[in-house]
Image (tube, rainbow, N blue to C red; front, top):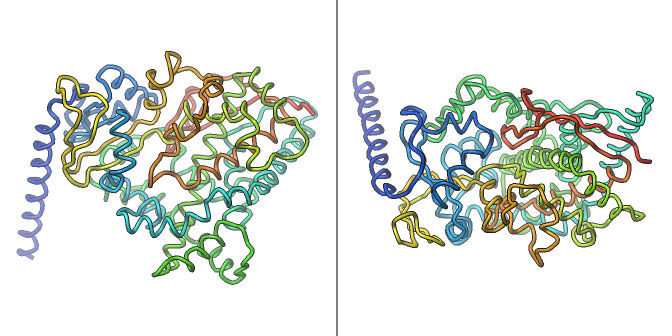
Length: 507
């Protein structure tokens, strides 16, 4: 016992020594990088970031200090916020595998989803998983599954008409965040797993309630402690009620994934176009060492989670903006009023107003606020302009430094988007030549970019086309951004996500 006690003391001493050694090394290496003074010796800027309007401080910092900003996290560890275009290009492109996700982020994904494509790091390991999952999320896959998007959108229309009939009115209030979540979960279920959660005809599925319970809630002190400390102590994710909720969510996702996997393997339809079938066939065809059951389940958990929260948040924000822009709403309605459901290719190419509105929604309301990375080794990154006072077009980043790429700041950069970058103006996309959504970081870019971007875009556009043909939308409430796992809308002052829209029948 005495030996174990001495060993524990020695281990703790070495850990603390290494922590402070890394801290002072980072302080020295980044001493010339400007940024705000720490507002708390204990929490640094974590508390003000957590309780402030999502993304507001990043905007202030970068407009004050420039493209590279240094700020302090809990217990004095140094973080960088980077919006420099050359640096971003390098971090997400050529240097992608030198800037893995921070240990805390990986611990979150591993605990919640398993060792799937969001968790894995390293070029070889990531590319192996990408080869298995990629075909299931390809452009052709999204093209094949577009009819499913319309079928679910039609179900939603049918249920809404029942609500109108039950209230004997042609104008009612509909909670859009609720229905956006139902649509997203039903769609990812049917299109990826051939599984119907039946959210659009019945009550929200228990899985949706579990996912929302984990992330969609008013900011609490417990959640703040976890958010502030998991960068330094990833094991904190296992503690308390939050840890229990993460384990519960993983179990529900895992049980569902295992059952669906067994059904898919039993049927083994070579003509099936679902993402699950395509993923299993790609794994058999390309993987030298096939994924085991847990690895397949991890990919399924990842796809369900990614297809639910970011998609439902984007749908809610798009319909909020439509509600605030009656002229654009009517113009898009007229644009998509042609007979029949547009094909996947038509959704992408034949409706410039719809596309512009979708892209502007992604620009001002990216579902994920920050893209986080950690320097695997001390490394020099290129800059488009020097850090204030240095004159050097390179910045040396110490090993272990956590880097935030604030998507909302990058997508409101006035040097790129103009003096009105803070305003919602879809028309900016009508005059930008060949500019596409690849300019945006909402789906990230490079080898770690979102594989499901085409799937998500087609799904959201198909729903928008369908709903606008039947209904008109307005919003009488003041809406604010609310950060849970993603950035959701809510009525100002309320606790969780909410978007009650006044909906009027047009047919």
